[in-house]
Picture: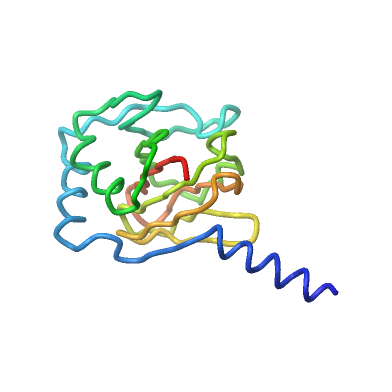
Length: 173
C-alpha cells in the first residue's frame, strides 16, 4: 500500500516539475546575459527576501500588476513568453543575490496565492540552489525550472561567485 502511494505521489511530483538545460541557443542566452550584466542595467536594492529577514538583494521588475515596468521587457521577457507559450503573464523579475561567506537559505514560500506556474531561470552558474521540500536544484546558467506555483520553494545565496542571478516568471496555466 505504501509503495503504491509513494509511486502515485512521485508521478504527481514529476508532472508538476520540469527542468531543461540549455534552454536558449547560446547566442540568444549571451545577448540576454549581456543586457542584465551591463554596468548601466538598473538594479534596485531590496531588504530581505522574506519580510522578516535581515539581508539584502537586488531586483529588477519587468512586469507586474498588468503593466510593463522595464524598458528591457521586450529583450528579456518576450523570448520566455514565446518559448514557454505563456498565455497570461502575471509577474516577472530578476533577483541578484550578492555572494555571502556562508550560504543563506531564505525560507520556504510561494510567490502568489492564485493558481499559476513558475518558470525560474538561472543566468549564472554558482553553488546557490533552489530548494523544494524534497528536491534541490543547482544554479546552472541557461537552465530553466518550471513548476506548479503551489509548491513551496526557497532560494539561497552563493559562496563561490560574486552574485547569483535568477529570473522569476509567474504565469497562468
